[in-house]
Amino acid sequence: MTFHRFVRHSWFAVLVVGIVLGIPGLVGAQDEVAPTFTKDVLPILQRSCQQCHRPGSVAPMSLLTYEEVRPWARAIRDRTAQREMPPWYVERNVGVRQFKEDPSLTDAEISIIASWVDVGAPRGNPEDAPPPIALESLDEWRIGTPEWIVELPEEQTIGDVDADRWLDMWADSRLTEDRYIKAVETKPSPGSYPVVHHVATSMRWEEEDGEEGGGFLNEYAMGKNGDIFPDGTGRLIKAGTQIRFNIHYSSIGEETKDRTRVGLQFYPAGYVPERVLISRHVGDSFDTLDIPAGTENARSDGYYVLPEPTQVTGFQPHMHIRGKRMCVEAIHPSGVIETLSCTGHNFGWHIVYNYADGEAPLLPAGSILHVMGWHDNTASNRYNPDPKNWVGFGNRSIDDMSFAWMSFYHMPQEVFDQKLLDRSRLSNNN
Image (tube, rainbow, N blue to C red):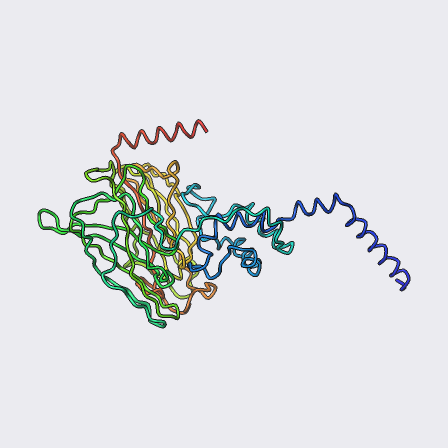
C-alpha cells in the first residue's frame, strides 16, 4: 500500500467512526447496555458484600463507595467469577437447592460485574444509586438481643506472633431454673474476630441421680452468624449449667484481646417445645483419617444411623487447610441413596448451610447419614504448607479433620408421614 492510499484509508476509517459516534441513537444504546456502579453493581454489593466489607470488620477492604471499590474492580470480577466471594461453597446443581440466608450471586449478577469491569468500571449517574444500607453494629447480635449472656471468666491476650493456641475454660451460666433455648450465638469481642478461628461451646450439669448430664451448645467460626431454631424445636439448658468454651486462637501480627461470649434467647419459662434439636458430629475420622503425601483426592468416610424419623435442618462441613470437598448423602432403609448436599471448602470460612423450611430433608427411621470428605495434599493446593508429608487427624491447623456438624430433630412416625404428605401436595400444586 502506498503512503497516499494509506492516508486515504485512514481518513475513511476516521470518517466512519465519526459518523457512528455522531448518531444519537447508537450512543444512547451503548449507554443503556453498559452497566454502571451506581445503578447495577452497588445493589449487588449491598446485598451480598457490605456487611463484611466495611471499616472495622473482618474483610481486608471496605466496599461501601465507588472510590473504595474502583481500585479492586478486577479483583472483584475475578473472585466472583470463580465463586470465591461471597463465601458460599454449596454446589448449586447437586442435592438441595434452597437455603436460608444465602448470600451467593446469581449467574446474571456475576455477568453484570464482569461486564462493568470490562467497559472500564464507570461510576454512572449518582442519582441512580440506592440509599446506603443500614449496617449492623459489629457488636450487634444476629439472633436479636439475648436474654442471657455468658462470657469467658477472664480476658485472653493473643500475642502478635504466638503459636496457634487452644483454650479450654468453663464458665458458670448463673441460671437458677431450667429453660429451653430458642436461639444461640457465639461472639468474640469487637476487634478480636481475626484471631478467633473457631469456638465450640458445650454444657454440663448434675442430674437428680448425681450423674453428669449436658451436651453440645453451639459452634462459632468465621462465616457463621448464630443458630435460630425452627419453630417448635429447642435445646434444654438446666439450672446450674456450666458452659465450656473451647477456642482456637491464631495470631495476626499484633497483640489482641478477647473475651468471647455466648448469647441465649429462651422460650417462655415453663414452655416445653415439641422437638429437641440435636447438633452433633457426623463422619468423625479421629482414628482413620489418612492423607498420604502428594495425594490430590484422599477420601474419608463416616456414618451415623438415624434411630427415628428425622428432619435435617442444616450442616456445617469441618476440615482444615487440605480440605477440598465434602458431600452428605442419606442411605434409606430401602437402599435408595439421596444426595443431600456437596460443598467446596475454604479453611478461612466455616459456613453453616441451613436448609429452607420446605426443602429440609425428611428421612425415615433407619436411614444412614454418610459423610464423604476429600483432601488435597499436593503442591497444587496453594494453602498446603508441606505436600511432602503425610497428614492425619489433629487439632493444629497444619493437621486435619473431616466431619460435618449436622443439625436435626426426631419426630413420631405419624408426624413424619403428615410432613411427607404436605410436602407432596405442595410439590404437586407447584
